[in-house]
Length: 143
Image (cartoon, rainbow, N blue to C red; front, side, top):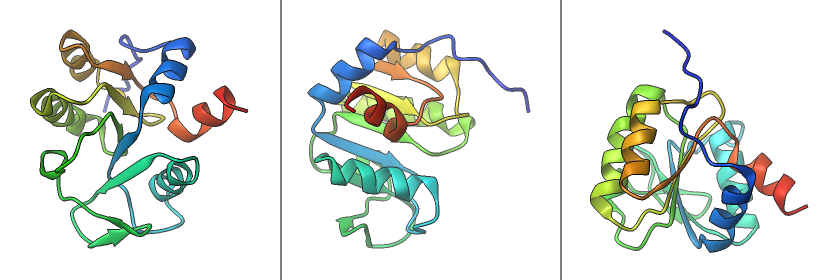
């Protein structure tokens, strides 16, 4: 597998604006396992006041929140999507963000880069952050 360097990415000012304007965050690949990064980040997002929606193929509840099987199944507005899945899946996530029409930010965690998906999302008016940890950046920006 070839590693990609993010060619489509937001800067710190855009990240800050994204966090400030976001109320609801869907976490794609949110594991019920408390030792996994996706669970830790989702828990942090809840703790700092976001409406966090776990998206996972199993479980009914994660961190006390209703679990959805896909982004398209979520029945309320989603401002930001944070992705904890392999880079190849990000293209389908970007398509789902575009199809929903309400997603303002597509955020992929550290090591997850898909420039083609990022470009597609950006062209649809969605802010793109690739290969950054949402928890780490939020802590750094709002310390």
